[in-house]
Image (cartoon, rainbow, N blue to C red; front, side, top):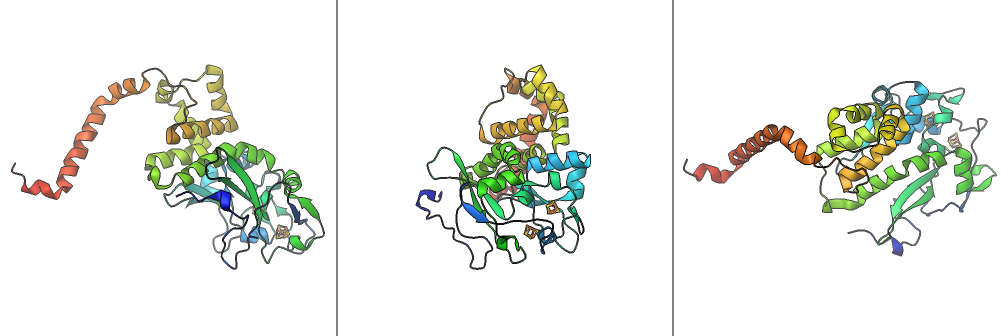
Length: 304
Ligand code: SF4
Ligand code: SF4
């Protein structure tokens, strides 16, 4: 059952020693914090990196490094599961024996600073997207993380969460990722009503979210255009622009996973596709039937 967020007293139920302050913040909430290269804990947070990456983070970093999404994923990320069903997420890879970020330079700090991920920009503020019970839209809230190694909380500077977000340049990240956060939230809050999505859905989610170059090969395939009806100019923009293509990917995921249709289909596309693959589909059904019978214990008592 969905929790009744309306009854929340702006407190979270957290483990006793959690570094997360159990207070829900909004954009106008004040925080006391500052971080700068002269601070004595400089780089400490990057030596304890646990950075979950978003689609926009991957696009900015792959562009910065001049690599394909496949190369970036292989060299700089590790997979993890975002929920109990196995919704695929990725984290920034760190050094083998310690959680030290590979982009950290001991003397100069972050070597990808102007393209650093959203989680690095937000820290020590955390972003929380949630949908209140019976509400028809998702909300964005914040919380603060106070870890022993971070002395920025003792710096004499007070500002609002929104001022901090502006300073750290998180707005374009949030704006781009917002439709994706909503997909993740929808999947997490759907719980057992939808059941465990197929492996194919997870593969599609991974490809559209993080592996834009492989996703491009998918939309270049002739079967894709037999199913989805796209204007030529828009389709061409998907072939050349990673950001536009990833935004299209969010729409496609919403359509395929949750039935929220915004991409028109070619008339009779599924019927035509079925006709083309009829023999293969029927052969698969027959094989599934034979296998199911072999596993059915009642089968052995039936006279052949
Ligand atoms: S990307 Fe940069 S800011 Fe983020 S953990 Fe790595 S070194 Fe630190
Ligand atoms: S003040 Fe906090 S965020 Fe800044 S370098 Fe130190 S540990 Fe990292």
